[in-house]
Length: 368
Image 1 (cartoon, rainbow, N blue to C red):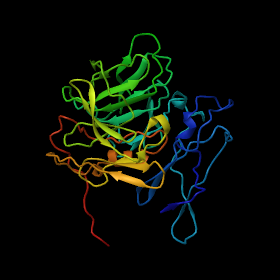
Image 2: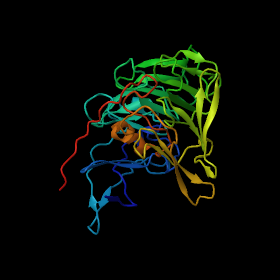
Image 3: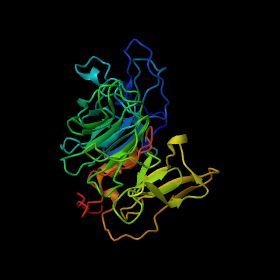
Image 4: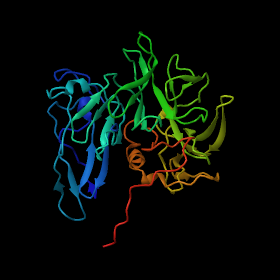
C-alpha cells in the first residue's frame, strides 16, 4: 500500500485538540514534522494523523487516498474525528492537553487500541476516555511500569505547569494520579524531559527521573526518592546487555547505570556516527530488529552518507520472544519518529524481576 504525497485526513484526528486557544483566537504555530504518522492496522484499516498548522483555516478538511500499483487512487472513508473545539459536550476539557508525541495501546482491555496523547487518552471509538487536566508535556512513557498494579501506567512530565505536578504517574485506564513530584501547593518548575526505565534492581518496577530545577535523583515506582544521583541523560533507554535492566542511550553512546556509586559505564561509543534532533540526541531508530529480545540502534554517519545498525555483542542467559511480537512494542516502533522521538516500551513488565516472557497471541495462517 502506498499513501500519496498529498494524502490528507478529514479534520485530523489528533492535531485539532492540541490547541489551547478558542476557535476565534490565533492558534499555536506548529511544525508540519510533528505528529505525522500513517500506520497499517490490518489489511483493511490504516490509522493516519496529521497536526495542522497555526496558519491553516479553522474549517480545514483533508481527504486521504490510497494508491495500489497502477490502479486509480481510492478515497478512504473516515472512521472518526476527535476535536476538542467543536462544541461536543465534555471535549473542551481535552483542549491543551496534548504532548509533542503520542503512544498507542489498549488501555481499557477491550481488545482495541487507544491513543494516549499526553494528559488525555482517546478511546478506540473516537470518544475521550479521560483528561487529567495537567496540560502539555514533551515526554511520556506507557508500559507496565509498576508490576504490582493491574494494567498499564503512564509516566508524564509537564512543561511550565501551573500546578505542583511537574512529573507524575497515572493509571492508563482511568487517569488516576498515582503519585507526583515535587508535590506541595506551589506550581512545579518547568520540566523539559523525563524518562522511565528499570535501571536499579534494588526496587521493584521502573525508576523515573527528569530534567528541571530541583529534579535531582530518581524515584521508584511509588514516587519515593531512592537516589540523590541520576543518569546524566533522560532522552532514551535501550535493552542492550545480557540482563533485563535498561541501559541509557544518548546520542551515539550507550552506558550502564551503576546504582551503587551513581556512575555510568560506557558500553558503546558509535565512532563516526551522530544523533538527530539537537539536544534531544535521538537515534534514527531504536528497535529489536534481529529478534533476540535485545534492541538494535540505527544511527546516521556524521557525513550523512550512511545509516549504520549497531547490535549488542554481549551474551545473555535470558531467553525471550522477539519484542516485535508484543503489539505495544511494535506500535512504539511505528510511532517512535512521530513528533518528539520517544523510546520503545512493551505492553508487559520487562525488568529485573522478569522470570519469563508472556506467550505472544500469534498464530500461523496457511499460505495462499
